[in-house]
Image (tube, rainbow, N blue to C red; front, side, top):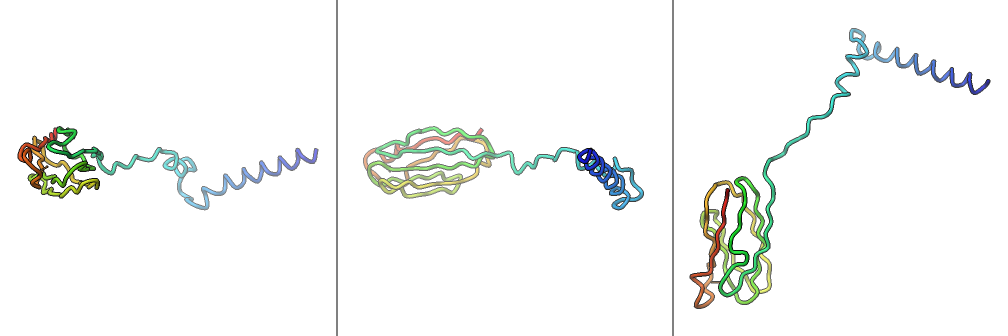
Length: 141
Ligand code: CUA
């Protein structure tokens, strides 16, 4: 019996607080109007459509592996390039990229592929007989 009374007391307190609260906060609005907006799902926040595309590239006499990289326009591109023999270079003229690749060290290059097309990347440090043919292709779709 005591428990029942206690429960009744709690319920009536809840009812009182529920019915009073809207009046205190917004006297002119119906309780439903006060509660309504809070129930609506939040709009997802879209920061950007672009994604980060990451590639590990090996440089050696006289090639880049992989030699073709394909990304979408607007992608952020991250290239982790490592020479496994002598010092090479890595350059993409159209994106203002020119790096020296010392043997055994990974060089990270980041840029935004903001224009469509096909761009040659090439070794920019003389590395021997096949230097001029040491190149690859970046495709931005
Ligand atoms: Cu590799 Cu020049």
